[in-house]
Length: 88
Image (tube, rainbow, N blue to C red; front, side, top):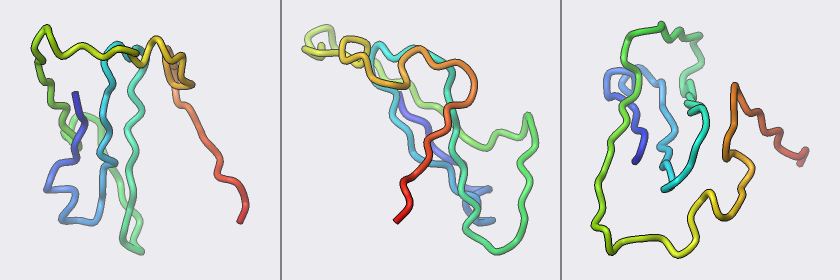
């Protein structure tokens, strides 16, 4: 499963981060947007700013260690998860 931005927004300078969803990941999806222009921008609810593509794999294509098994930080997230970059 992968999340992609829509071209209408990309042509206006609004970029959606391409985000893969790992097998067995659970939680609320956080969409990430970047405004690549110097102008303010608005994204309205219900306008279809991104699309999620679902893929089906063969039963033989099983991950040895799933996202859930690794116990990573975004597993089971609720609400917005903020990550702060370290000062350079």
